[in-house]
Length: 249
Length: 318
Image 1: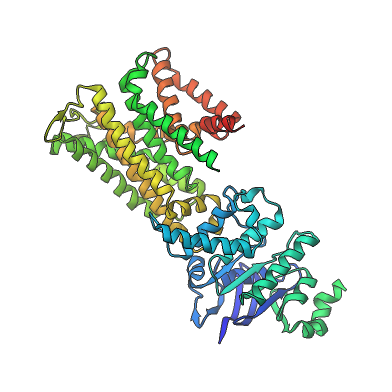
Image 2: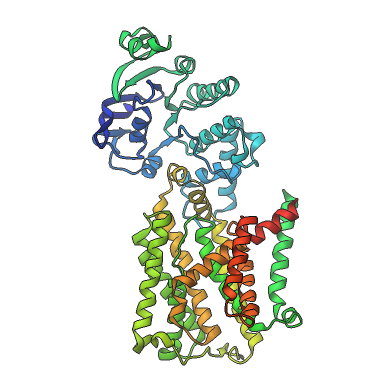
């Protein structure tokens, strides 16, 4: 069974059609990359999947359940988590506090006035595991707002991971990064996919990253689906080369 | 880390010792006990505003509505129903909290300026109701006569009406219970979701927090605290009047919170103390006392954006 299925999604803002009739099926355990030139509608498409706003037409099905009408926080509760192109974190809180809020919400404690010591220990263990996975253990007590850009991105991924999502949506995880940082994040995403078996959909500009990581690639152009296939198929696809890769190469 | 915790504990102990001994150190410094009582009550109100402003990031500019409703709730009980101080406090707290909760549900989707404007409008609605409904509220003359009643504890009776020191300690007890509850909430998982909303609403939403519902809960809790502060204020003055509902009163509370330091738990109490003491001192010299308070406010915001307590804390850390 597919984990995520988007059927004929269209999103228009007034007369501007940002996403036009795009369908997408992601299998459990898959790593899917969405690429396309600037303004292709990638982030809008992501927003439809994660529920930032509803599609004008079309449906989003997650684990067999139609979630089109559900709000963002309800989709998170069902097992979707995402990061943003521009890092969305709690700058004046420490790395630990940032991740703890997600851990507590995911554990169903968000309205609790009180948590027991054993619950607290269980949370702590889960948070520490997540911080180790994202290589943030030496920054636990630092304010997130004071970290380097790359570490802020890692912290945002940690905040998504601690929710134990079944689908992880990453919007340009390497945006604005230097070579070393890009490498680190790429390794992290690869570990999450290969070792921790996360199903991941990511938007990415950096072609080295995309072709290195993705099982399948979806290409959007001017809001429409241009092509879909394995990295090899996409690399040799003529329409893609003309619209996108051709310009870059 | 543990050094920071010890410092926090020492500061906390210092605040409580200061409050517990206030009737004894205030007189030699030229103050009087009733001034301390006013600081506690207005401090509680400013801390309630800050529960929302400083810890949820939501600015209500009409919080005097719930303060004034608390005062009227308490006064009406004492005047018409039963001569019981605890019942008056309970009624005032409930009136402020329940009305705040009901009206808050209508506006939690609004943000920023729009939210602040609607809360001002709510406050003004209650102001004009109190102003016009003379048969019940006494209109512009205020609600009177009523007076706080001695506390009957079974084995003894405490005369909080005539013994100003006993009344101070009664108010301090109510204050302590309320702010302890506030502190407890802020340290709970729910309290941390409030911080999350303050820091980044979009991220909070994408962690699975139903942001509107949590803002509503925080708003309602803050209205209950505000109602209690208003009810205590009615006891302080043995009087309730429409100006307690007016938006200028709301503005005073916001000013106290910001001046004292809205990112710190105790900041608004310091802000209230500065406000009340300046008012007491300056208003005996000039009727334009508010322009001096306003000047101080501007200076604090310009030079200590984190408020007086924020500035003190920064200095002690440096």
